[in-house]
Length: 155
Ligand SMILES: CC(=O)SCCNC(=O)CCNC(=O)[C@H](O)C(C)(C)COP(=O)(O)OP(=O)(O)OC[C@H]1O[C@@H](n2cnc3c(N)ncnc32)[C@H](O)[C@@H]1OP(=O)(O)O
Image 1 (cartoon, protein in one colour):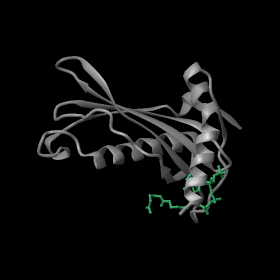
Image 2 (cartoon, helix red, strand yellow; image 1 turned 180 degrees about the vertical axis):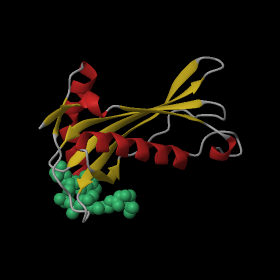
Image 3 (cartoon, helix red, strand yellow; image 1 turned 180 degrees about the horizontal axis):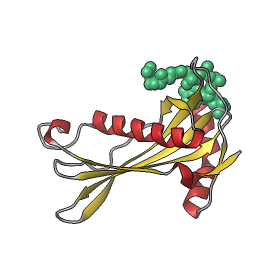
Image 4 (cartoon, protein in one colour; image 1 turned 135 degrees about the horizontal axis):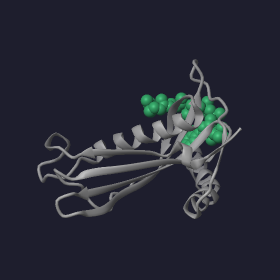
C-alpha cells in the first residue's frame, strides 16, 4: 500500500504562556522539543494507522526565540518510509499576531517506528511525494537515514 505525504500532514498552534517561558520571557527549548515529539508522533500515527515510538530526534537548532504571547505554529509530514520506520519533518515558527510577524524557530527530523502490542517493530505503508518540496525532502531522506544509523552505531 502507498499513501501520499499530504495525508500525514498535521498542523498545531500553541499560545506561548508565562508557564512555558524562562525569566527573560522566551520559551524553554525542552517545551518545544516535547511539542515536536508530539506532532511528529501524530503525523506518523496518521500515516501508519498504528502505535508509534520515537526512535530518534535529529539535532535541533533554535534559530530564533518565541516570546510570551507569540503563537507557535507547528507543521509535520512523513517524508520517507523504511520497512518499519518513518522519517517525519517538523517545522516550527513563532507568530507575533499583534505585529503580524512570523519567524522560523526550528526545523527537525524525527524517526518514528510503528510497533505492535508487544512493542516490536511492524511494517508501514510506503509514502510518496507530490509537490517539489515533498520530492526534495523524500529524495534526500536516504542520506539522512544512513547518517543516523552510522551515528547510532558509534555509541
Ligand atoms: C526511553 C523513552 O521513553 S524514549 C521515548 C519513546 N521512545 C521509545 O520508548 C523507543 C525505545 N526504543 C525501542 O523501542 C526500539 O529501540 C525501537 C522500536 C525504536 C527499534 O527497535 P529495534 O529492535 O532496534 O528494531 P530494528 O533494529 O529492527 O529497527 C527498526 C527500525 O528502526 C530504525 N531505527 C532503530 N534505531 C534507530 C535510531 N536510533 N535512529 C533512527 N532509526 C532507528 C531502524 O533503522 C529500522 O528502520 P526500518 O525498519 O525502516 O529499516
